[in-house]
Length: 324
Picture 1: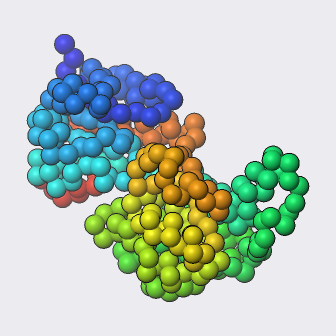
Picture 2: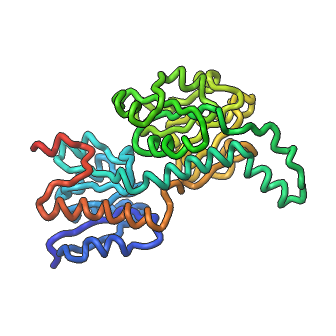
Picture 3: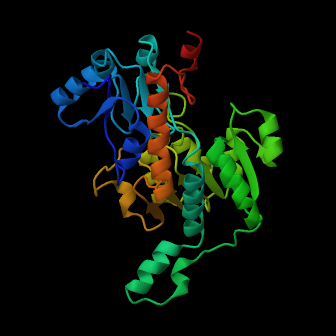
């Protein structure tokens, strides 16, 4: 019988091999759970010494059932699907992966921005439908000299800023939790939220989803944005009030949007945002590359391995546990 049991709640990645590669020298059984079968899932949780989590809801019931669990290792940066208060009260580490996906997500945000600015999708669709007419894209404006606003200025936003400087855009950002020195080193102008909304020709969202940021972009915010502005979101869908966004698009309050995330992973084809030609939607794929997939899985598995071997994890979200 193996010394440890590691439960992987869900794994949307093409291969499971990175988990096995990291954990091969640990005396453990690996269980790939079926989260759709609640009874079976909870039974698996009861056996777990450590859990690797992607999108699964780690709620109070799950945490109570996982009585032997020492760590929830999130395969990604956001941990809003894990009940942090409960996990911390139980003394269970919650870790995330904060570096593996930075470049890929930054590149995806820029891709959505450029595709929106140059009207790539409607032009492509028109050509394939037999319409060779560049005028259908009007108006298209040169990127040079425009203002890129970043809502949030963490690692991904800073990487977007670094790369977008090559396009000769003015870059501004708003983040109350980042020191002035970080803005200064990046050469990015710090503004407040109202200034960000009013000045941005392209506004890219890079903030976590929590009680403070939920539906932070709603009717009032869209009214403050430029009519020609594009909204880009590669963070979390719940930051945007999607009905308000649909209304703003319908009224022409903003020019369009590029979204990698929605409030639910697939809301169905009747979702109102699916019916706008000036909205690009990708299926939460910003991080997705062969290299990033492996790095995410390996990073999460290594955190579990460290904790089970009696070491402290590296990327700890509930850092107060480190002193206990």
